[in-house]
Amino acid sequence: MKFSVNHACPCGSNIKYKKCCQLFHKGKVASNSLELMKSRYSAYVLKDAKYIIKTTDVNNPDYTLEFDQWENDILEFCNASDFINLEILEFIDGDEESFVKFHVAVYIKNEDQSFTEKSKFVKRESKWLYHSATFE
Image (tube, rainbow, N blue to C red):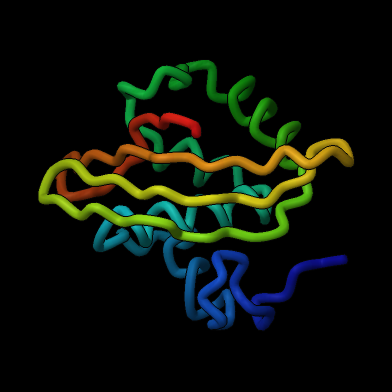
């Protein structure tokens, strides 16, 4: 099924995608790490690997200059995954560093691979970027 910009945004906002995360996917800068995190989740759902790469900090352990391979790896993960639900558990805002803890319900190759993650975000040149994560 093709995803319409008039569908509810995958991030769970109950707002149409075109008025929510699509704005970030088209270049709007997230005002905080929570917006960035939700837009990244939507990018995974919609298989927008370029956005995932663009919003990842160079100090992230998975960051690589092999962009084509990185993009392929992200797309492989997205194609094997069925994202069911995003639940925000905690948001710790900061000026240069912040954290978002969330739970994702996802099936990967028809197996429940749901997880809870606490993501660290850093602000570089007035833009929030995904830095790293711990899993619970």
